[in-house]
Length: 250
Image 1 (cartoon, rainbow, N blue to C red):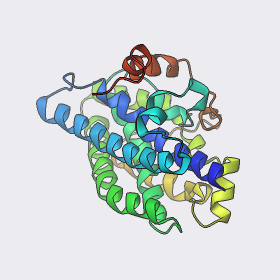
Image 2 (cartoon, rainbow, N blue to C red):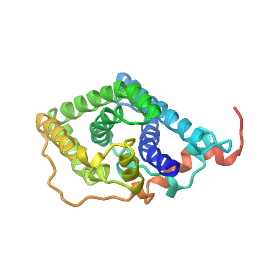
Image 3 (spheres, rainbow, N blue to C red):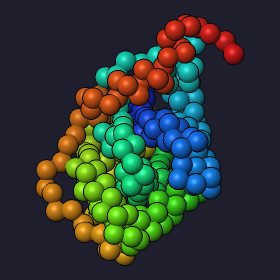
Image 4 (tube, rainbow, N blue to C red):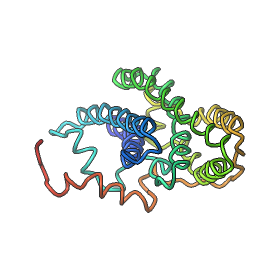
């Protein structure tokens, strides 16, 4: 059970780590100061959640493992995040579309994780639900602002919504570890969240005067450790210090 629990938590927490890293790339590059600070704070929220998850994993693994070992010393195939969160910051519309697609899912996940049989995961979810609810309000507002703004902002937002749509279905795939944890009453059956997810997404897109994509083909692989070409570049930057100076102490 311990191995499946660790893999389950990694499947949840790696999403926050990689998306937090992506948002961190934007520090100092936001369209205005207020938005720049907000994106940086969202990144910090996600990394804070990641630390809580990784500390829990380290305690389960024992053998002197630390959260830093888990965050920085794994190979690419050992990260279990979905493909959505590793997509690049092509332009601000992509940043907001990626954030929005993930935030809708993240709120649903945290709401349900509060009913887990695992006390540590309940505590993380109880704290995190406040943060991710704000994240969703922030990203939803920007989707509406850009979608229902100028002709250029509308076009760019629609481009981003269409381009990232193919990564949304993977959020609801169940791994073997997920299935084991669902049976134990610890994990969330994300497949049951799919209808509520797309209903919420469609409502926001409609309010933003954006078209809901009709593409039926979806990409997947991240949950099995099979990532896009972007992942290696993310890890090269994320892991640089720990790989270059092993066992470094701050």
